[in-house]
Image 1 (cartoon, one colour):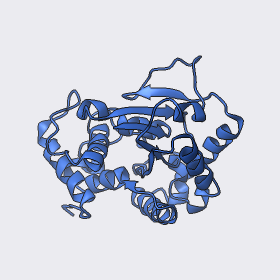
Image 2 (cartoon, helix red, strand yellow; image 1 turned 90 degrees about the vertical axis):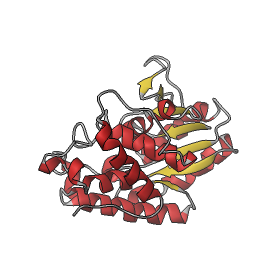
Image 3 (cartoon, rainbow, N blue to C red; image 1 turned 135 degrees about the vertical axis):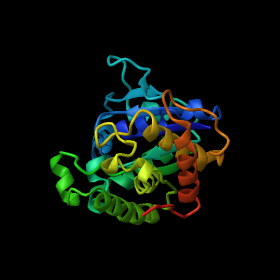
Image 4 (cartoon, one colour; image 1 turned 180 degrees about the vertical axis):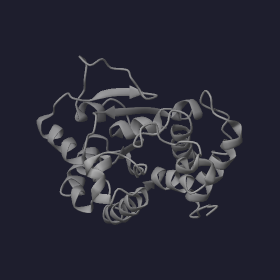
Length: 249
């Protein structure tokens, strides 16, 4: 399964372990830092070569050898192309327009066989010091609720299936084992991006299970991960993907 992510550092986080977890995947992340839907469209209009191609969360193209969005769409016969909004705008419904339709049309034009999926990202951790977080009352839960509300509306409008990574991360935060404020394991490395161990593992497991329904069979574990948490993560992924949440609170 060949997947191209039209994203930023959040899709970098989400797919860093995906190929290691499941050899059915060929994944490339089209990376530009902090790239919003509006910026993707701006770059599309000018056909600027501003993106770095990444594999496993690592640049495989040098800074001097960047690609444009249109070039990336034509690099392979992609099966899946994913899109997402930049983190600080992800819960603002108005930020998705008028960019979604043009981006979808461009993908359909250049990669007509690809199925477009929407990557629903996660909220910041409480305590994140970033001015745009105030739009969400500086609350992780408020931000997630707004992300879910906005993306439910947008994805329904464009009939896009949703990869619910944000849902999984928020459900894990409800468990004492991953409640960092109460001494649990951190899912974030900077209150924004996912931790290199449990956070990225949970995200990759969500993608793998979403596309291939094999989360309980995977044997891959990032370096340093404690086995006692893997069942919790696997259970959470399965619960979210089947429409249920687990909580100890």
